[in-house]
Image (cartoon, rainbow, N blue to C red):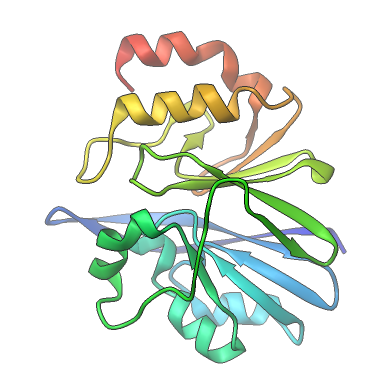
Length: 208
């Protein structure tokens, strides 16, 4: 069994009075005994089926846009697993779940372990105030949520976002990683740090 499993779910994203159809990447990291889920979106049954009879150790949310957290509480209740989120995401979390709080806070440099695999939290604000990425050096992988995609940074045209901040986060924390690092994103295809790094100045100039 691969330590990284991938599931695509479909639903909607709503913010600032608009609603859009989206496909989300849900990532699972672990082994045959225990697993961690990143950004459980849209379809709790599909995520539950993929978890199977394994112990769910944590639900880690890279940020609190509703398409990334809408199934976190039901999975938390079903598996008695904590929801982890950067506290700067509180305003967005409350829009999705006004009557439920995350269970634990994420912080820069924090290490989360599942099945002997270490995921290091990188604070990468910009797409939202408390966006984080999860770096797994032993797997040469980083899970970037909506901070970095194949072809550029995440969107910054909505509330609680900042283009200058996301560019700073990407240049400081992500592009410093080895070029062969695989970038597993919140939407769409994967890429590598090496494939994206040459385009930083182009993104700055285009403002995207």
